[in-house]
Length: 487
Image 1 (cartoon, rainbow, N blue to C red):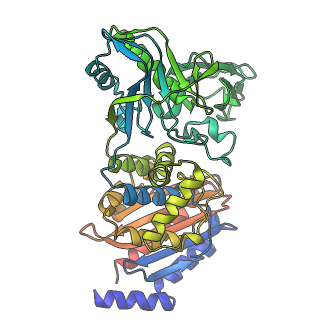
Image 2 (image 1 turned 90 degrees about the vertical axis):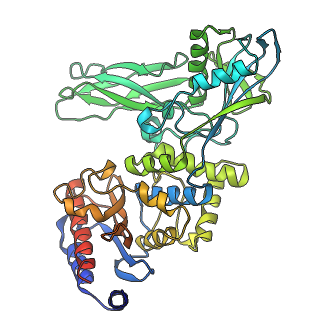
Image 3 (image 1 turned 30 degrees about the vertical axis):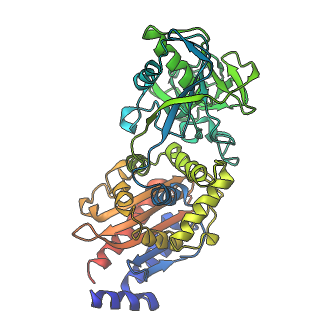
């Protein structure tokens, strides 16, 4: 071990074979021509083994989730759970509530999500809470209450197209089905409207307009849903090529709290409960808003009678990093703000995360962090900061859960990385990609599964196809692993 550390220390001060190999790949690989590249490789004592532009801030894309999930685990704890409370206003007489039921959101991003996402519908549990409180009928409304988190669902500079997609939905204190809707779309004839049928969930208050057009053969899929939480209107725009097979597209639902209330109301009625007032939510002005979107009655502070809990944070973090789930990442980002300051706006989230980074011994001033998922192009991390952060996380009590959350090649979003190289299973990495951006950062493990080194490879401004850029990054990662195996 002493000899290895000595070699690595020397390698940081003068070019070693790895440094030469990385330099050759970056300067000669055609897929990286004209692109901005950042590379950092560190030993577990923090010493640099090799680097290229290590302090250059670059767009990390979903490599930002490394910072979000790690700081969330460190600050909240791996066993942290999101809680959704049930409360009521009014009076209960002979089993009849003359008042309203409130579903009080606590930021649970898995509420109503698929079982594969640790989601569930705790409607039976919530019904049991009502029965225990003596409520057998509701002469009032089921109200989705997302007031715990201030501010808008999305970060302000996400692109207009992104906020209508499943990956740009934005998270609220009370969400449902990851704030998405599924549309079944199919091509017709070129120039004619696409077929678009809403599958799940139902949102009967929405006024949807289909402006999607069937495109010519080979033109691909550019369907986007343009929507907002300011009004119940949405337009499907873009094209869907005539040679495309029918598919289910996932778009944003900006009314997760109302959707949750609507489905719980229907569930109660299916169980024999009388609910006279239907579903409602609360607008940003604190007024109760029914499905006709008339807001004229101030919401009240309900009496809480019980709550349900999410899966533990360690499980949600694993799913976040495995599938690069923006929705879960943004929920963690805002939860850190809520738990720290009681204000879950994005400015507070950035302050909360910076405080955690300082506790880990890092200088957050060398970063530009504006959201939790990496969807914004205003995010800026250097490869050197990422490897320093990864080193610091090994000293966190939450590190076992953090390391476990990172996929190896062949898993999740790494399913195409090193597809023909099963010997690459020593890597535990997070991917990050958007147009012109491809990044991989994480750990390289020894034979016992213990971190041997931290690595970050960031590429920005690439014009080559993603598969070609990935081949160049694979070459760099392969050179790093080969070098570590020789010292």
